[in-house]
Image (cartoon, rainbow, N blue to C red; front, top):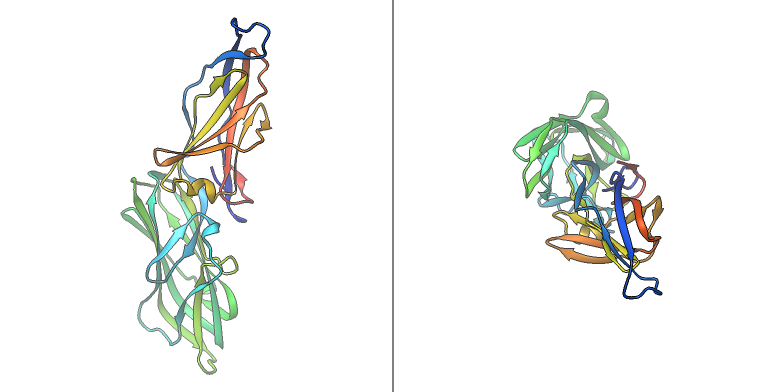
Length: 301
């Protein structure tokens, strides 16, 4: 159930067929009301894991990761290396706490760190990005072609191969960036290398596949000629999963339901309910699917 800025994604449930049975009310034979029932139970429809961009936020010593671009601020955060480094130095650590339990598939995670080199022609960097997922740690270091950072701004990239693993409820994902050596070429004055994150213009990210939530299509409720369709979003982000996401919609018979749905907290998760007034009465079969987009511009799962 999600998507991302540029490299995000939309998650959608596979369509479910629901049989609605409407009976004309015997008490009011001239009215337009119906008595009805739905032959469908609560159904878990999504998601084992999903591709997501985790944005680096906060300080270098106590940073966090967030799947929501809305958490980016207008003030960038930096970690500065102003002298040549000859021994390993930690640049920063960022943690995504309380990850939803599930399986993380084998895949390559992409770490993109924004930087700026000033008062030098370039900086040659020997750096390592480490991902701790649950109890396992995976690392990648700068390649020869990616180790020389020219003057000005740019992006330092790491491709970290992650093995299939599982993560328990309230487990954490931690990114650590460290530099073993930094050498400035043709320094003039106070040469420095700054790593930058935390704003939309300097958005450093980790892209990978993780469990984000459970998406449940609730048993429909029939009241008169109205049918109420609800989606339950169960995650460790509570109402943020809804308020900070780009959009959430439910589609009945190929048509997105319009109008403002009712949003309520439900056992730590979120319940969103739409009213459908397209029932015709009698025995009716409808196809229902739901989609949530965390950030715009991604593929549909």
